[in-house]
Image (cartoon, rainbow, N blue to C red; front, side):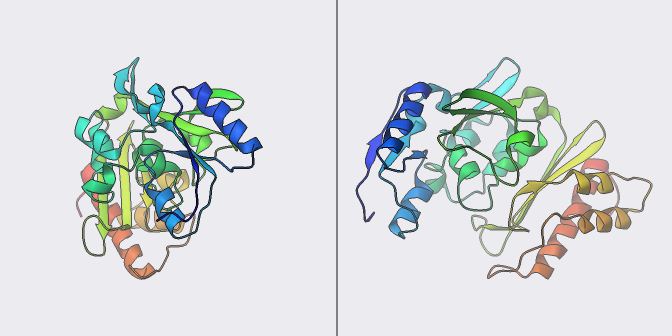
Amino acid sequence: MIPFDFQYIRPESIDEAITSFQELDKEGLSPIFYGGGTEIITNARKQNLSTGAVIDIKGIPECVEHQEKDGYFIFGAGLPLTDIIEENLFPFFSQVCRPIADHTVRNKLTLGGNICGRLPYREAVLPLLLSDAEIVIAGGEGTRTVPISQAYNNRLVLKKGEFLVQIKIPVEAKTLPHFNRRREKQTAIDYPILHIAGVQKEGKIRLAISGATALTFRSEAMEDLLNNKESSLEDRISSCLSKLPFPIKSDQWSSAEYRRALLEKALFEMLASLEGVSL
């Protein structure tokens, strides 16, 4: 059980959510925004988190919006991953989200929770980094829409009192050739020891990686070397790997050497899939 009492607030508008946060913060209650609550509940039970109030964003219409509108696929931050997968507005997005946890957890785990949570994997962000997604953020200074490339620096950067409202993905992203490869130690719902996603846009490959290092990222430096067709296939991949922004990690699920071998193999497979090169 959760070893402390807290207030539960369910605002019905963005303004109400912001006002609630500000008032609760003044009372010293250290409020936090709440989507599905899977991570909050787990950490609270382990006494790794304490708060005097949670603000549930799922009563805010914009946070549960799920439709195609004005040239964008719109995904509210309060949507459970199961809804995104089953509605399948953007199949590449659905494909990436499908192996995240099991079905029961996905029924609760929200898009915003996966992107903003404490766990390092943040797999749902992979196709967003590749698809020129925009994110809508609300806080005390108002509501703003920014490219994810400006707001995501290995994690979503939010100011105190801000929360993620929704994700907007240009509908043309649906037509891009894509690649998705996930590897686990045992079952398909385990945390990934590698998850790599890629798309091809205007003849160039974009890639984003989770599970191999401590953070989930997209690296344009890696992409530049991978797209250098003047080099051999082997050189393109080895030079791409030399630009990894973080060390490949070693943990109880996999050694760094094994992760690197999986990543190298996945890069070959991605080039075969998106460029038609022979392995």
